[in-house]
Image 1 (cartoon, helix red, strand yellow):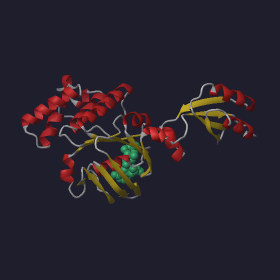
Image 2 (cartoon, rainbow, N blue to C red):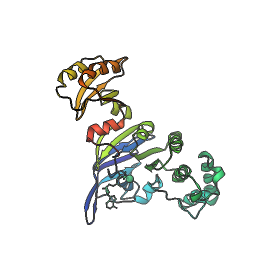
Image 3 (cartoon, helix red, strand yellow):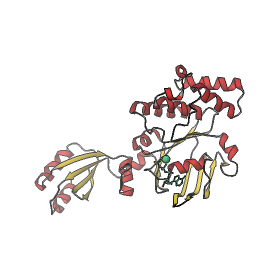
Image 4 (tube, rainbow, N blue to C red):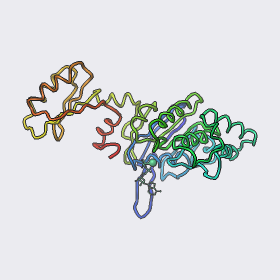
Amino acid sequence: MIVEIEGLRKIYEGKQRVVAVDGIDLAVRPGEIYGLLGPNGAGKTTTISVCTTRALPTSGKVLINGIDVVKTAAVARTCIGVVPQYNTLDRACTIFENIHFHCLYFGFSRAEATARANQLLTQFHLAERAKAYPAQLSGGLAQRVQIARAIAHRPKVLFLDEPSAGLDPQSRIAMWEAVAGLRKEGITVVLTTHYMEEADELCDRVAIIDHGKILVEDTPAALKQSIGAQRMYDLDLQGREGLEPLEAALKGLNGVNDVETLPKGLRVLAHGTDGLLSEIVQRATPYGLRDLSITETSLETVFIRLTGRELRE
Ligand SMILES: Nc1ncnc2c1ncn2[C@@H]1O[C@H](COP(=O)(O)OP(=O)(O)OP(=O)(O)O)[C@@H](O)[C@H]1O
Ligand SMILES: [Mg+2]
């Protein structure tokens, strides 16, 4: 395992005592893209801060490539790359210089640093903007520069904190491609996100975290499968009493896994089966069907099931 987190806790002692990370255990395999998915304040950034030696844990242990990030922080830092939640490019330096100085800081010779910076600018399609300053770049380009800079010293693990926050959809996809491309270089990626599509699209495994704890961890496919259905039909039958016969009828339909009660009607959990929608509508119409919404199960569904809340309110 390239990243090992054991019993990690982080308590901020201030005017208010905040338990930001409340006993996290996880292990990331070499070459994996691993996602921490959770809502605001779940403890994602704090977990990354400890892993990247930016914060000290209250208790517990983090090993990166077998190296303890507390006992031997300076050594650990050589195998870690970080893209923080907010843009930390040096505004007074060009794009080239941002990467170049990073290499020098990590002990590259001037010639090596120049070669590495140029190579990364080409790899990340930034060569034309080498002389631009960070303020002149779009959010998407700035994010690509941050990734290029973070891997410049050839770390084993790259930590990305909310890599697509504030990016337009097109830049987000470009960023996903850049991150997926790191696989070829054998770089392990740990990222945080509250975008379930991002976790779903990009990550080999995902830990869903809330209130500093891991609720579940698995591949996106397995997490979605744990719902036991591919699709949810929410029937708005507001004000109707006596839905039991309808519930029983719906449960009997081919392809239906389960039926649950909602405050304003019923939820049908089902596999994609031909003609199911019209069957449901037919059965529900006599019960005052007012509206119907269909949702494909997603990681968001998994989160809602576990917490009763949405990832973003
Ligand atoms: N330096 C700090 N001092 C005190 N409390 C903090 C500090 N940093 C974070 N917290 C608190 O710890 C909890 C976890 O915060 P953290 O930033 O790790 O969450 P997050 O999952 O990254 O959230 P977001 O999605 O908003 O980035 C929150 O309640 C936050 O207010
Ligand atoms: Mg955060």
